[in-house]
Image (tube, rainbow over all chains, first blue to last red; front, top):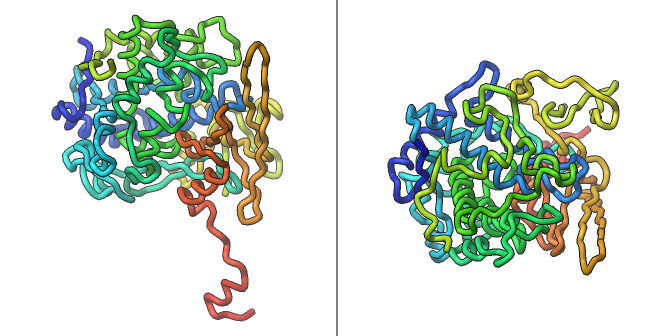
Length: 322
Length: 146
């Protein structure tokens, strides 16, 4: 049975299970000598971001961002996290909840800071460290953070042991709105495209619009910037809100697919080898060979495998997208 | 601080004398059987882990924009050389077609000016830009004389 992914504000059962599940993953070890399962995703995300595609890329395109694979790579990441949450919760029907941030984007800037998502019984609030809610310092530890090599601002991973940090509304003071989302869903109409040359931050199409580079930060990027703190650097999965944001991004992609009768994923399999890792039949970047992967995909996932997700999960609604 | 690449995305080895180099420049090196375990071991030992392009930050980085316009192919190359407190600061900066700049250090941010980018890095990571006290200021602080 496919899991149903619901709005975290309306599905309190999914909300509570999500909180419980990510905490269980912080104490779950798939293999001796590995970090806890939650932190593996943090390292995986950092590594994907540091993997330029191609290695000589001068546009910032990497294995999971600023290129066509942005949406399928994160879809896979969500599927895998959902699989592990189902495992530790012993609930094969558990569906990741999403944060409909555009609903909050309709509020005033001050009201956005106190929206329901930041309540004590949901994600908790702002602070360095966060002191309220289920991820306050005493109940959620950040173990790996981004640092820099000496004389450089190239990101490295360093060990740490501290509470979660958020700085809501500091760097930009508003979230994307319903209108922003609808504009993105209908970008380039009637010539709807998923992505386009030069396949990076300068492209037309849904991927770049939804990632949030044009006139940025917008859409997905703007959520990271609006939250600041641990959501800002390459280790952003340290904050469990990372997945609620990406689940909403994935929902918008799924809605776009449905609204526009499933436009083609591009680049296709015959595209230039400079796009390796992003083409329809290329394997998506992975961090390790085994143990982490679910029994269906088993770590061998291509964009083409992720275009129809109806067998694995569905979303409660796309009605806000049109 | 000793930094070693996590051998997942590029192979990386140590030269004689300890300076790191990349295998794709200097020949093949052995891949780890379990890079995740290697990374965790390093982190547990209090050591940093670096992957992929983050290990290649020497010298000015070039950002390249490619644009097709009315049948013409336009390529614009931009190089940055940054110094903070007199010290060179390496790293990748990307310029998009609107002229905004971004960096993997703050991967979802973009700025109208590289000045704003560097200011933000200083604000967000102050420890990385901490000034080492000079001998004179140390003496003043401690009241000791040589």
